[in-house]
Image (cartoon, rainbow, N blue to C red):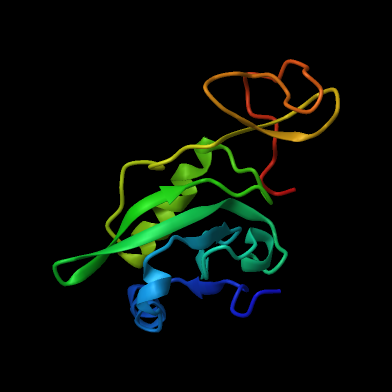
Length: 154
């Protein structure tokens, strides 16, 4: 496991300020790994950490990558995605992310700035990332369902 890859629980503005103050310029230049745990709490880990490690192996409401920007005297979310192949969260998981960020008092966009559409193939059971609305399994060529069929708690 990458050092520091276990997510740090961030449930208040003070906890976020303490956590972000310990980040180097190099760390701030790339997105961090995040999950929202089943308590609705944001967990952050260094970029390229495994989401399952960030969640300490637990179930999540959402997961992805997040980058922060400094605006005047406060921090805000610059970019945020649901790109997390360990959990494959649906784009509808944004509401859990929004609540966790609001709890911490971070400015945020109105939704994921980069949405990733995940589907499980009903034939071969492989997880797929759907690109350009092409709902075809890259592994076996079967049609993928239009509705989300990947549970982020798996």
